[in-house]
Image 1 (cartoon, helix red, strand yellow):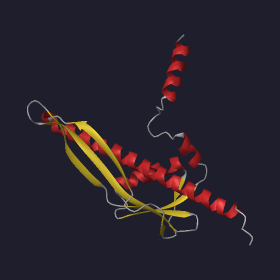
Image 2 (cartoon, helix red, strand yellow; image 1 turned 90 degrees about the vertical axis):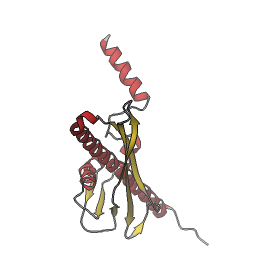
Image 3 (cartoon, one colour; image 1 turned 180 degrees about the vertical axis):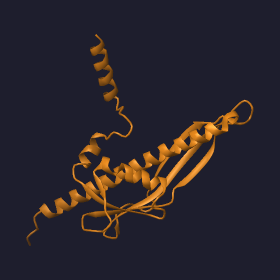
Image 4 (cartoon, one colour; image 1 turned 180 degrees about the horizontal axis):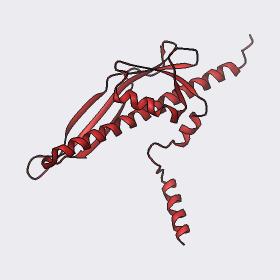
Length: 183
C-alpha cells in the first residue's frame, strides 16, 4: 500500500512539472548532448557570480577555454545590479521583509559576432523576512539568499547559452545539408 501511495505521489509531482532545483528539464537534456567550449569574460573574473557560472559549467557539458576557435562561444558577463526594497512592514512600522532583485547583463558572441539581442540580461527576484531584533541572522539570511540567487542566474545564463549554441549548430547543419539551387 505504501508503494502505491509513493508511486502515485511521484507521478502526480512529475505530471504537474515539479522537479528538483538544479535538475535539467527535457529541453535542456536535448540541448546538452554535444559538448561546448566557452570563453568567460568579465570585469571581475573572481566575482561570486562568475564563480557560480564556473561551478555550473560541468552540469551543462560546457568546458571553459582560454583561446578562441571556430567552435567556441564567448560569454561576456556585465556588472550585476542589485536592488533591495522593503516588501513588508510590521505593526510596529518597521521593515519585516525585503525584496531583492538581481539583474545581470550579458552577451554571447561567436567569432566577435554578437548573437544575443541587445540589452540581454538575466534577473531573479526573492523576498526574505527581516527581524529587527536579530539583525545578525537577518544579514546571514540575506547573504544566503544572494548566493542562491547568483547560482540560479548562472544556471539561467548557461541554459540560454546552451540553447543558442544548439540553435546555431542546427542552422549551420541545415545550411550545409540543403542542396544548392540550380539555375
